[in-house]
Amino acid sequence: MGDLHMGVEAEAINDSSSDNHSKRVDIYPLSCYYFGSKEAIVFKDETLSDRINRMKSNYAAYGLRTSVEAVILVELFKHPHLLLLQVRNSFFKLPGGRLRPGESDIDGLNRKLSRKLSASEDGNETEWQVGECLGMWWRHDFETLMYPYLPSKAKKPKECTKLFLVRLPESQKFIVPKNLKLLAVPLRQVHENHKTYGPIISGVPQLLSKFTINIVDI
Image (tube, rainbow, N blue to C red):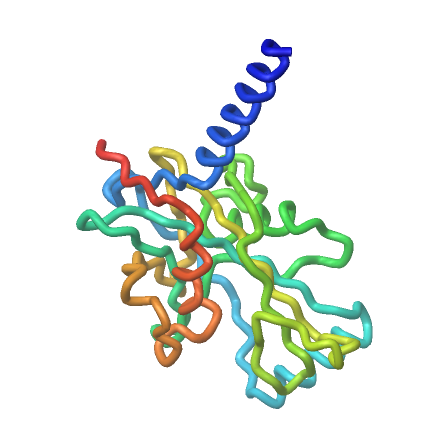
């Protein structure tokens, strides 16, 4: 009986150790990474009205629009920084984008990260370590903002955005389209800064609160 108890206890300790390890995020200095550029991505130049009409058309054809975005961390000045894309020198976004019909979250995020952050769009040069889903944001109808919950009365939401933690290796190449900027922004600057970064990005530090961020010295 004693042996059984010891075995159960050992298993519990191992499970706890494994869980603690999964909740740790190792981040490496920004200087470990190489940054280059490639051909620009073509963006749709549209008004808000155009965007709403496009969303309505896509919803009628495919249903709920699902996007996947990556939360990627690096170290700079002994503080965790979040990698963000700046579009047209104005607004910021997390790397990622919309899924194709029938595409899985992981496959779609790998494709989008390769398109925006890798030299090769087919992803052969980079293996992205896509981890757990940190949170989900919902657009209840075409004209509202996105919220981190779905009210019971919202029977047919129009859009869902999922945030995934993506762990970086010790070294990697980032090749970014010329019309995008990849910036490392301090987490403390992002925290609750809705005006600059919007509600989704400014909420990332809270989503990361359950993790231990381990700065690796190289």
